[in-house]
Amino acid sequence: MTELVVAQSRIPAMSAQAIQKVRALEVVLLGLPQVPIATEHVLHGGLYARTICIPAGVVLTGAFIRIPTLLVFDGHATVNTGEGAAELQGYHVLAASARRRQAFIAHADTRLTMVFATQAQTVAEAEDEFTDEAHLLFSRQLGAVNHINITGE
Image (cartoon, rainbow, N blue to C red; front, top):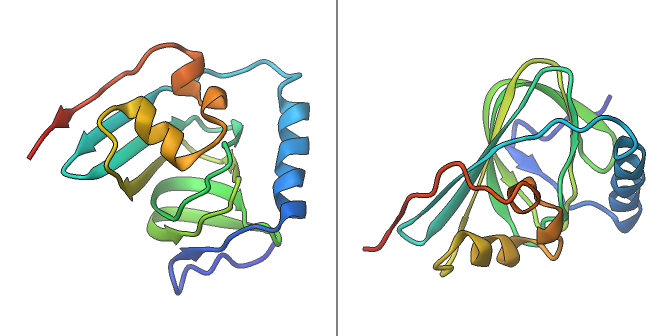
């Protein structure tokens, strides 16, 4: 298991090969029973934040993230780094590079909040900004948004 660059609080960009490995894992996972993951959204003050909770025992693959973000991690999970895997436990605020497609194995309930600056006026616009794979997001598949707080300043 490799070390995530926690000392520098950074998740690096992933190679095309590493991203393809996550896509291959996703194909396998889609053949298994799916666990719905709710998404909470906040769009406020030029920032967009989306939070999910991965239940303990669940393996999750994310959509391709094409922009840099902050990733707030709270829980216990193993995450792919592109060059291997790192086990994170506790609370971390990580600078997450563009060009990544993460996979997580939750050892305990784990909350992930992704944050980035945006000019988006709607959640859908913000989702389209960070990924070309918005159609794969749970928030689009479930057809429901659990929480939206949109206020202008």
